[in-house]
Length: 152
Image 1 (cartoon, rainbow, N blue to C red):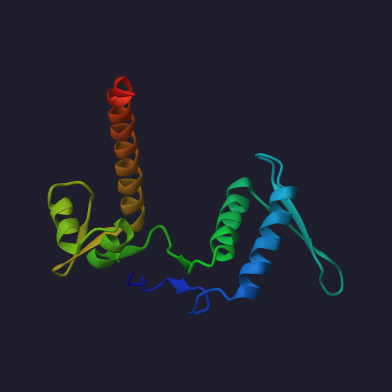
Image 2 (cartoon, rainbow, N blue to C red):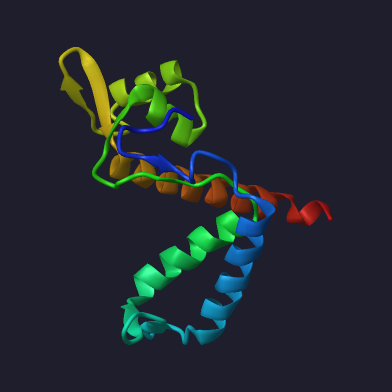
């Protein structure tokens, strides 16, 4: 996948075995401390005194998800949600070809803007389209399974 201008890969490399082990250990500790929708409170050693950090439920979920991916050995890239993506970057996120994405844009499946003569798509619009597409696929598979249930 082509990285957006403001995206930073995980240290420019895949997570090492030590990175994975530390991420899994930290994820287990944080997950054990997280109580449902409550804020997650952390205390880090500091000089001259410890530093208290409070993570909102959304931030703790995001942090745990990041640790899960690093712990699994996946390369991680952060994309700011307001980021304008090129058609190739958007296509890579959707796992489709660039020409197919352009066809979707021209059909109005997602809004886009022109920067000069180049199309740009907001990352949020790509993620929204992907979520909608995935939900439609799930519903179609559920309907297909229901139709085939009488064959069993």
